[in-house]
Figure 1 (cartoon, helix red, strand yellow):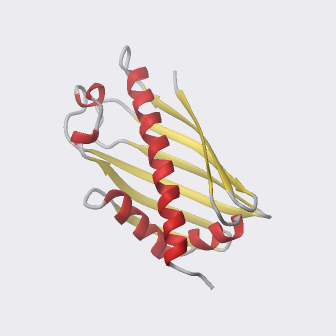
Figure 2: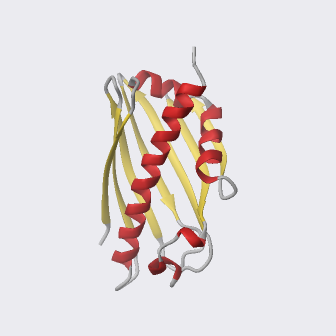
Figure 3: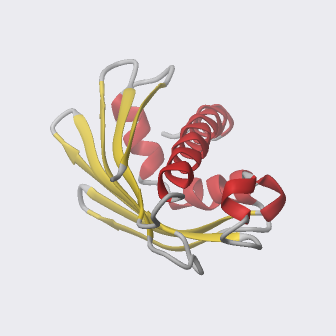
Length: 168
């Protein structure tokens, strides 16, 4: 059974400003570099009208993983991510997808993202599933915890990036 992630972050600027950041390709490269230096990279950013699709590879070094995870998945974890965002009126709506490379069983994260307001607030709703009897629930909870921390850290980077990179 999948574990749920419900998480929100707020920004000190508007949804329109966040959209301007999301449509700047350099932001995504800087995000991965700051968040995952040495363990990740942006594979592709596609900006097509009111849609932004970002494919990236992130990783978690084995020394940062909970022991419940390293017992069944030794070594660093590679995490391919695909985020899609659409500007819909005065909101940003999107989907997030992530998997874990090299896992002996499928590990999947699928969810939705909605950002609205001035100042902007983003709500993440996702499910984490690990199809492994007895241990799956523990791993799911560890992934949910790590994702919550990651989303908070990405929010912090976004606020810093916005202050360091004035957009016209």
